[in-house]
Image (cartoon, rainbow, N blue to C red; front, side, top):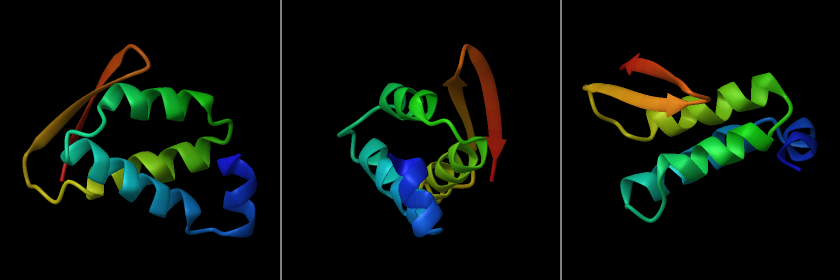
Length: 77
């Protein structure tokens, strides 16, 4: 469904990612939920946009390690 919305509203994946990041930071959700959502998305560009927005929402300058799709990804801001 986000794929359809993303076509009409190009900022939708970014905004959705910021919301997910805020939920993770507030301990209202975990990365497992983010992973499940990303796995259900079909478009790779939208996946990347959502994940980038989640990472940017943390606003910290430390290394963040995520478990995604069985592999470890390291992001340095």
